Image (tube, rainbow, N blue to C red; front, side, top):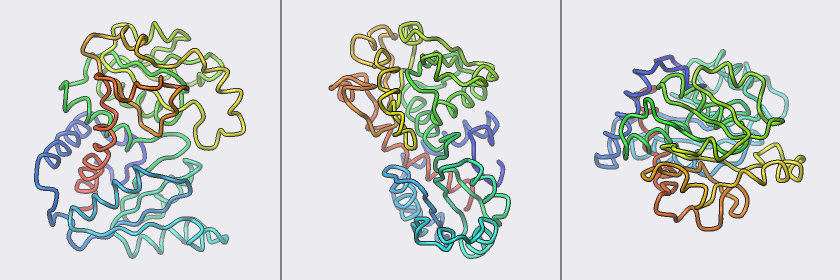
Length: 293
């Protein structure tokens, strides 16, 4: 495994499946251990966070280490200190760093000057930690995802991008239902991505259906345009009926009921959303053990 985790394809397929197995193993054990005793994790966030922040903080604590959260406003970085200087100084004092940044380039620049592992806790390009939890949730219930049909309904955003990377690594069929104007030109550079403007085509006979908000952080100025463009891409109970009878539904949260999902879909019998959210903790713990133990 590479020293940094900035994208899902920083792993090969064996490493990714081994990480999922490690997460399952850690989930099945006692919460508290001393695997990372004496280790310290720094979290530097430019964006707000619920699941990413708490899963890393609690995960480090359960593994015997400690974590400290720093917003950019708390650092000299917010007053003009360079990324290079900040990275060199902070990485000389901690054992690992989690970055949640507006631009993916910040992750690349920070990792280039860091002497410790850097983990991408979200950028405008990708969200690999979220996909670890999603894959863990699927493997935990269904086993291998190889050859399965996964349907993504909505914006081809950072989470969707990480799914596309995972599809190539783990050889599953990834269908993206998205308005043409929101489909990136490079989407078909992936081997296992199928683009369609029809949500029904994407969902039909799928093993997993997933979605995300129509207006991601940073897209607020285009909210009205996006809500209009995606209004026919809601996942509801009737649409989920078109998937396989044993299909599961995931959502990375937060969710906007009445937009990308119907009012009661999170509590539908096919939803695994709250388990998926909990699995952020177990996936993050496996990642931390792999990178900084």
